[in-house]
Image: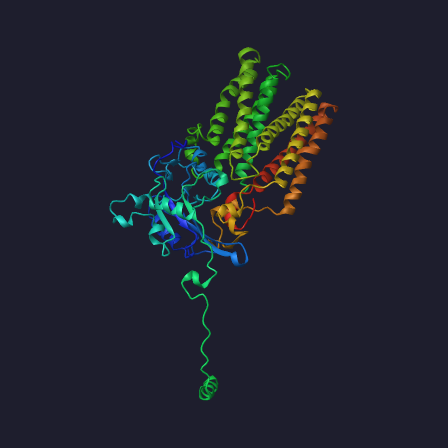
Length: 246
Length: 315
């Protein structure tokens, strides 16, 4: 059924910190690694070693420059499915393959029902869905549904692959429907943002904006200014200095 | 957007076929078309043949055409599903109307009502085809009210060209209808000009700034793409037609779909049927090429918001 379920209380999703992301692509690589054997497996690559390599990924890391001069910055920008509350990719699906789970808000594709018409990927503003030309069906991020509920994994591993691998702790996973969850607090404290709010999709995933740049030395705990080095010039040292410089 | 030939053939052929069905379904029961069963056969064969060709083409680009029947299930939420349901449903009254016209020689009473029902469903089907595109908020060039109006206008003008051709080929000229066809083409031309002006002067409200949530920091520029080769997204949504080619193709559409067909169709109101028939066969072919070009541009000129993540600042 591709009508959206009533608003779920639980809204599982990601909070991505654009301040600390270093753009290493480790989350994308671990996503590919896990999911090519996971729920939507395989994440097909075509001509992987050829001149025109192409393949399905659920997570892509773009890098942007924003602003100029002292306020300009480079921002690494990971992008995966935002598991929107008002997901247009779900309602356009003609077959019922694309659906949003009522219990936790995760948006999934039932591959056995997908006819590969690609309309859902046209409806998504964010490019979260990638078509698998080999399997003839649409594929997308599952929020690692086969990890987060997996009782065979240690409790600390029951998070999406991208979150578990991030070396900069720029990715946080949790219930954004619970105002007291760690992720909801992060969004409140840091002013978490929606992507393209004007599209009205109400994405669950939020992005934490980069912090203001630190332009003063004191801001990172260094002395405000360095004291000039004491003058210790003697004839002998000066002579030695000249000899050693040669 | 990538202009897939299967989608272009589907929307044009299906639209023209159902445009012809809508005209015949209304005009024949009113006694304005020849009752001749052979004329009825030719009209219904052309209308349903073109519509069926279009529907078949629509399954060519599917990853799993054998599951296409599943597309009938989600009519509550999906315009694509509604289109499939309505397109199929139309065959029922259209088939009965055709049987009445061709085999029973009847266009009155319930047989006429089948025609009017088929006409109504055909128009609603073309509208829902357009709504597949109209409902995609991600594409500024599609998510506007010009789109359904132009899809309907193109269906009617194509159907009118085809019907005028059939009338003349059967030696049954109807000058009034030739004038109507010319007026329909002119109306379609005005709408298309207005649409092109609209997409040339307006842009999607989203920008690279809103897409990344970084607008507050100043202008957002792509520093490094996530991948060095094309992927599905850049191939499907990143299609870039060369501006000079777009300009030339628009000129071709102005001439082949609108200007020349208006002049020649109006002329058939005054020409003897033998010459008029030959002229209309030429208009049929020329406007066919014109509408394929028009629909190619509709796809190729459409820009998707995902490209804001790949270096475009506006779409």
